[in-house]
Length: 204
Image (cartoon, rainbow, N blue to C red; front, side, top):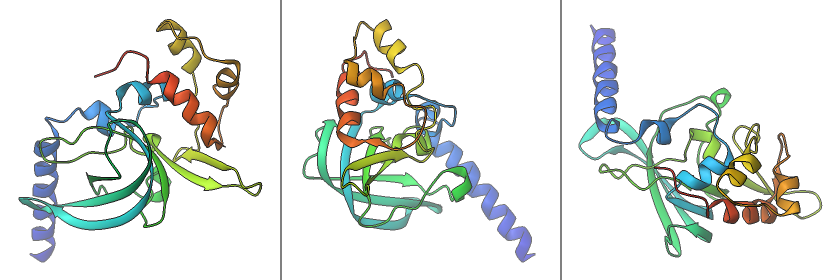
């Protein structure tokens, strides 16, 4: 009987989650298809770099069976969204395993995020799950580098083509960066490229 109750509870939670998230752009929020940096830059409503100062786990308001995580960052840089000195977003805690690319939020992490505006339920998320969440680290030479939770694999594929199609010419340094197949890249070069890509037409 206990097992049946747990199964029913999980089923109801899943059904409620679908109802809650259905009005939110599923392709944009939970897309697992590969998306490149041009897409991230054109689609994101908030593009920020910051350090996590608070992580809180709590259920979604009005839906006690749906777990969420609320993350507050000290904003180091904002490329879109003008969030102020700190920014808080809240996402459904999907409980994805590490092999699926999703890592836990931890206080002290430095991140570069491509986020959607909060939904009517005050939920947001990095675009493409781990594709729009970049971890910043300092290498042995003291330089800041970053990579998303796919190791930047496919991140720069067709970025120059997409930029040219939209009438944007990349600089030689940006083209060099856009030829990267995978692995961490220099933070400042990455930011320069993102700034250029944010001038392309928005994707909704």
